[in-house]
Image 1: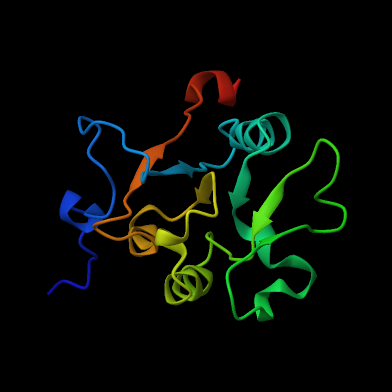
Image 2: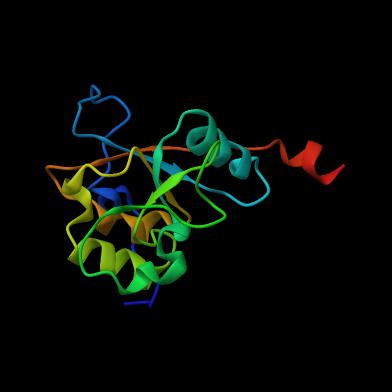
Length: 145
């Protein structure tokens, strides 16, 4: 090998194909791309739509030591007009491994999962509890100007 990672679509086998019909077991997954408006999308999902989120915030306040999956309230991040979180970190490789070991994919606890590492996040899900990916892009010309 060349030492290059496999970036083919086979590395995303635990994500639903865009053309597959939506099913209740699908896990909505937001791929957060920096400086693309993603923080606004996360705020809208959590604060406006009151989604239970899986992101890096779920392990704040000592919840990285929890041994069972749970929906948690994080001081300063939860409350009126704010999100609740699953006690996992879906943005780091270590956090995704912990979430997988805790059975995150089939738990149904998160209304939306936030990831920033596309290929590594494939292992958060399973063939029977697949992720359904979405993201937002910003026009690079408008961003540069």
